[in-house]
Image 1 (cartoon, rainbow, N blue to C red):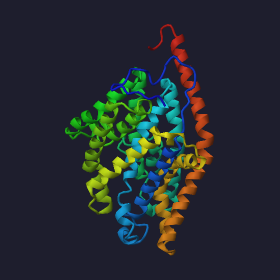
Image 2: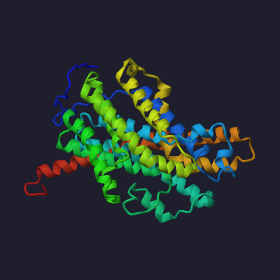
Image 3: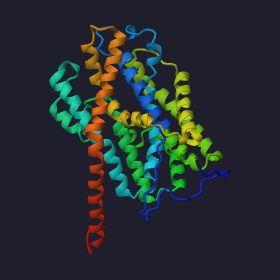
Image 4: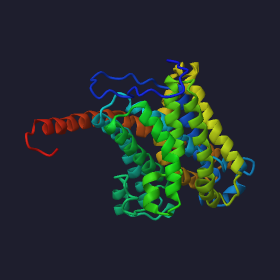
Length: 382
């Protein structure tokens, strides 16, 4: 780690477009573990706090002692967005635009396709009572662009993937213009307030472009990434705090209201502020201190299972819970959670692990061929 006491970010490049050497991307085991814990928080929220019919009774009566805590589990998604801001900047470092596209597509689509297919099979064949969906809806969902066509998500959690996809577009644009530390800092400083201003237009299209509720969360992750090389930079720390304030207001003004509707409970804005701050603080500790050197295989494995677990846990978990009503509630909860984790492991082993690298290699090859054809064409499209 290179320390600096400077108060401004230098314009050194995060990536070198002329470099062909691979950039070493460290694996932050404790951040992997944080992702998994956040996914478990979302799982527990969906199983024991969000209103659902799986238990055959009001969900708040199933685990009355757990419910007051579990109802805040939706904040695991907010922590995902902070981690994503950090990880995606790390992924963009040293990559050309085509390589970034190949990296992101090969990372998110194979498991997503598996999740859409499995959940569609569940809801169309095994458990039609779980949710009314159509085959056409499932096919559109495979693109991850269903919101563009105003087609409902097969699984409600997919809304976060659409948000992630738009964030990738922003990072791709930064790569195209030259992703320097100053550009990254400018995005983290300007994006949340500009998004908040345009939010006042009450336009779905504008909100889709600027993502006012998620912008400060992504930007917190971007700043933490910049802090890795400049951990004593006052401007970066100040920007992180400002973005936390924006995130608190945006989450309490939007996401909290949705969670209250889903749980039929009033949520404490102060608790939300503390959880968001604690989540960001943990990521800072795990990324900026000697704890970033921790290398534990099981933590990395749990991190790899986080994405497929998130994709399939909701409806498959509810179906498992409905099948386990005859068992004691705690046993049903443990078995359904274990079943979802096993399904996530199968997706990782049978889909992500073999298909992801092959898809990345194919995309890198064909995108490079397109670039070469453009360079070789004397009067082609420019």
